Amino acid sequence: MIDKEKIEAAVRLYLEGIGEDVDREGLLETPGRIARMCEEIYGGLSESPREHLTKTFSSDGSEMVLEKDITFYSTCEHHLMPFYGKVHVAYIPAGRVVGLSKLARTVEVFARRPQIQERLTAQIADALMEYLKPKGAMVLVEAEHMCMTMRGIKKPGSRTVTCAARGAFTEEEAQRRFYDLLGRDGRF
Image (cartoon, rainbow, N blue to C red; front, side, top):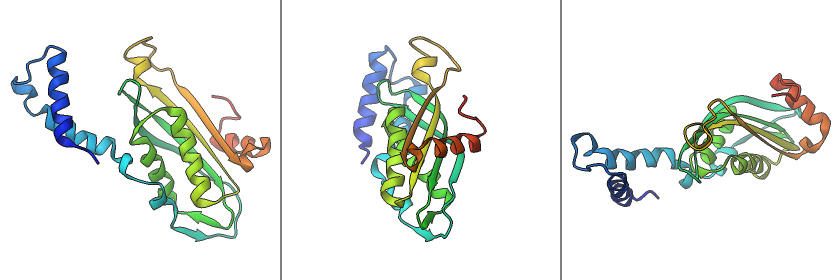
């Protein structure tokens, strides 16, 4: 649970630490704004993917389900700076499917936490396997990290790509089909 009072106190100290006047008109309400923002951008800390992935529907089909281009925003746990991009999620049902919006909601659960991209990718794939019990799951995440583009090496436009394959997607043919459906032929 978010402790707004602690966040507000920390923001005041932070502003003082960088040499700002916390009583300046433009900053008076900033600690409260940041505390409210934290409730939103770190809301995934109090959520479980279970609530989104346990309401399933029977399905005779066993063809791949792919949801492409799910936009996400997250916060790098190393620098507390944003990283953002697209997530592509696929699974091969084993008699049960989930509503399509639930895949995007699952991405949000994990993205709305202090995070690293590698863990985000694995957590989404693992949650699909745990709750949907599919034949396989594959998740590909492409993101731009502000800690690389705004500070440090300063390389805007660079993207990091991570991928997690589980179950049937550890086989080359399933991966090839995944990349074909993304329109990538395995290329980025």
